[in-house]
Image (cartoon, rainbow, N blue to C red; front, side, top):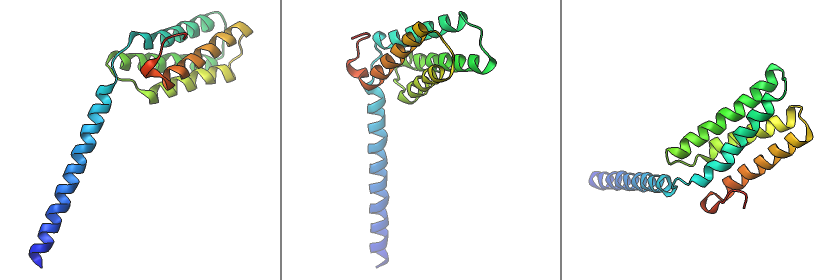
Length: 137
């Protein structure tokens, strides 16, 4: 009976180790699945430039400036990870949320609002279709 318990424990440990190995391998393959694509930087760069231009043309409160800074910082962090070969959807989601927060809470002229709305749409399209994404397409 004692031998049977030992074999069962040994089998359970072996099964757990195998499962862990499969998990690690699948995560490594998932991480390797993304190949850097210069096209993915275009909507990020455009959004950063638009945020900089809109922010520089107006005087904002401290809180409004923080919203612009957060959006630009998170977009830059996402772009940095792209260059490292990682498509970080969580960081992109955070950046999209920041730009949307600027749209929802900061005063701006109609044209500036249209530009940022288009940028958010393009970033969401990148997130949803990064494997076959083309800027503006």
